[in-house]
Length: 417
Image 1 (cartoon, rainbow, N blue to C red):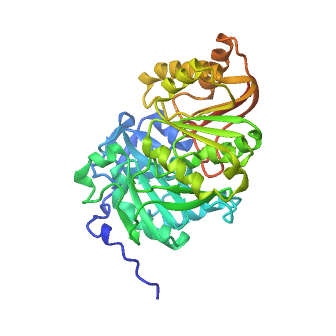
Image 2: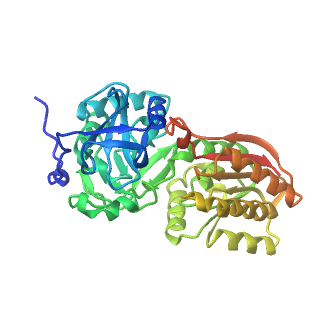
Image 3: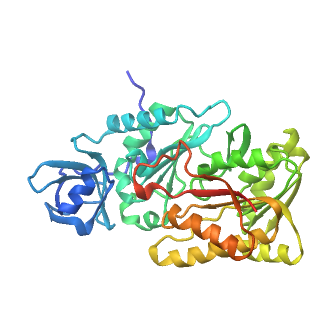
C-alpha cells in the first residue's frame, strides 16, 4: 500500500469543479490551437457555457463541435485558457502530471547530476504546462505559478513531483500578479513550504561542479538564474589570464565561472547589497577550488550605468566585460526604452573593454527577439567606433526548451571588441 503524502498547506484548497467550461472560438484561434499554441485569449472566444473559477478545466471546440483542446480556465486574465492538452481529450489529474514530468525528465537526461544538481524540471508552456515553473536545487524543489488557476491543481502537481523526484521539500513561489489574488489562494502565500522540512536560510546545489547557494523563499525568480548555465560555462573557457568585469552580477554566477577559468581578477557589480553579499559567500563556498581561490576579487554595490560611467571616467579597463541585465520590457510599450538601454550598455561596456577583449551581452526580454537584439548590439558598437567581431550567438539550455515562438526569450552574444 502506498504511503500517504502529507500536504497540510494544501488541505484548504478546493479542487477544480467537476463541471467543465465548454468554449467555442474564432476560426483564427482554431488554427492557432491546432498548431499547438498554448494560449487562448478572451477576445478569441465566441461562446462560453458558463464562467468558471480560476483552475476549472475548460474544453475548447471547433465550429463543428469537435474537440480541440483542454486547459485550465482563468477568468482573471486575458489568457482565458492555458492549454494543457491538444487534439485528444484527457483527464487532467495526478497521473497526467506524472506523465508530463517524466516526459520533461527525458528531455533533460543528458544533465549529469553528479556535477549539476540545480536545473529546471518544468519550463512552463514549453513543457506543456503553461504558467507553471518547477526548479530543482539539490533536494529542494520550487514550484512557481504565474496564475491562480494553478492553485486547485497544486496538490496533484506536488504529489507527482514527490513521486518522480523524491525531494526533501517543495516550496511555492507566486509571481506578483498571482500574489495579489488572495481570494483564490486559499491562504497560500509566496515562499510557503508545501511539503517537507522547514527551511532556515539558503539551500546549496552544484552547477558544473561549482557550489552555489540559492534562496528559494525570498530570492529572485526561484532563487537563482538557471537559464545561463551554458553561457557561464562558455565564459569559463574564455577567461584565462583576463581581468573580468561582471555587470548585473546578482549572486556571482558568471564571476565564479570566470575565476575557475583562470581569470586574473573578477569584479562583480550589482545594485543589491544582499546579492553582492551572496556573491561573496559563493566565492567562499568554493575557496578550496584552486583557480577560484587565486583570482583577485572585487565587489561593487551600485547602479550598473553609474558604475560603468565611473569606471570609464577613472580609465579602468578589463579584458572581458559581461553584461546580463534583467528583463527590460514586460510590455510592448517598453520595447523602445529597452533598445535604448541596450545601446547605452554597449557604449559604456565597450568604453571599459581593452582592445581585443571579450564582450558578452545577453537579453532575457522576449519582446526583444533575436531579430531586434543582435542588430542593435552590432550597430551600437559600430556607432561608437568599436566594431565587434562575433564569436558566437547562443540561446536556451536543454532544461529551458522552446516549444512555441513566444517561448524564446534568451539571446546572448559573445564577441571580440
